[in-house]
Image (cartoon, rainbow, N blue to C red; front, side, top):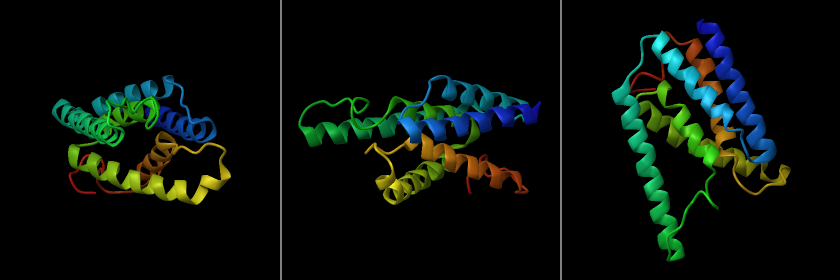
Length: 163
């Protein structure tokens, strides 16, 4: 059962990577399948932690409030960042991966993922017709690499407060 869930996670991550890089959009079904599968893995591996998931959700909401505040001050009017600056798929991806982490590990993933996304965007922006960053795509690729590394580790790097 565990292997089937990991296959579904892999398909979802690869689908998001491909779709976001190619079209700057991801199908809504991919984050839903990803979150459902990760919740199943969490439950199956007895790592289902509601408190940790709520803490991470609050972290995401705090970040979104900061993004709204920043762009609203910058533009001198209330701005909805979903219309121009960040995609709904990016937010759905960030919410979908919550079951994998505890807060400290999520924060580390979030920060390093943003840095890696900027680096990849800088390296490959001339090769794409779109000028926006495929954040969900880059983060799903990064998460896939971390999951492969985690497979070979003697402990779960996602469920520990220290990577």
